[in-house]
Length: 505
Length: 84
Image 1 (spheres, rainbow over the protein chains, first blue to last red):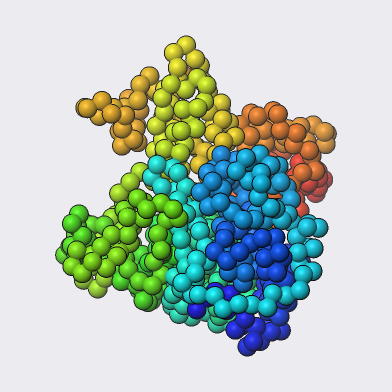
Image 2: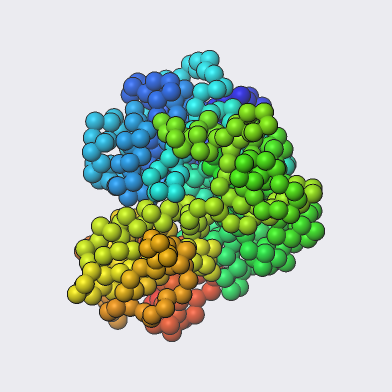
């Protein structure tokens, strides 16, 4: 089934039910469907044909939800990019996906203006132009294939270049039905999404809510956790998806009142490993809330979940395959390894992506044939062990990807920026543990001879060219980069403590 | 006093969130969050700074946009806390 059909079906079941709550705006299913259908007409009128990409640069809000469903009704593909993306990366994404239209926040017009690749692209901007788009006649609807692309979600490859994960409607449909089944979502649910909807895990909340006829409470930022917790109380939220960095912030609160969370039925954690200590504290603090620890990848939305009843018996596990997905831990030849043995996790199921947009080499690396029967499996690049019952325990990644607050960062992308900084001779970037973010980037920098650099200067340069979470939290200066015996600069060695100390300033 | 408060807050934001980048205009009524000046972990650092520098104690329930989402709001919040 196509995802926009969820909205039509849930509206047919109960059109008066609340679909979207965002700030002061409350949209019933009837109203949300109507606005989306009107915007779909506008998208077509602005030249968006089926299969074309709509680049969305919007904050979490009702406009984002309308734009997503309007794009799907028009048969086009969403390419939802985090609005905090800097110009260089936005240009790479624009070049790769070649959007037919950009829908952006008014404050981001300057950013869009600065991207040559988007100079000729028609634009719809929040405010008067967006509102006018909602005045069009509702789109009549067309028969469109389930196999059509729904989304290109850009993620970082190990070399830092963005790769567009192609998810067809039937892939997202398979994932959404599986997830809603184990979370037991229903129309009575009120799900609060504060994760960016540009992020697969955030977008998925909108999809799940529409599938089950639930209400989605949309919030923009977790910068003020207390404001979100009051929202949970006031909107009687039942489902609260989190990343471990948000759990860490919750646990830092000094006098948090459990009464704020009385309505909550479940929380989910994904995107990065949730420390057991945080899970335990959360359970002690909110004993009535079911905690779902989950594991997934943009390439297939979700892979595994730990049933809440198993939290004590399967400590440290990210759980078993979600319904409809097959998981196997394999050796380098792709053959299954015995329980307890470390290997790469490979997965298959209807939720697995089509591949990477216009990137056959990366697609062939990710989707490889099963040596037994040739069917394609997604290679996760994550090392796991599985027990005899299929419960998975994460070991490590096979590449150098760092995951601050659950978002993939390629060390190379940060190193490329550092190498452009005047005064930097060489640099390496590695991941280090961080109390709140889970992991943070650390830069090991060799200054050009005679140049004195400070940590602040390096961070400032990075902040001007990289998204917040990619900016190194620690900068260490050394006389030379650590090298392997063969003379190759080594991230692994750079992750170890410096032989010499401190800043060169 | 309030001007002094504002400049201390501004200096903290420039130093810690803009890494010393003085070129940012940073109007006192500008939302720190909507303009991506401060992220989630930044607010916690900001709270720590305010408590220490202005000798006020901040409860979790105080950490909301109405009190902390612009230089003006932070200055007003500190003034109310100190008067209390």
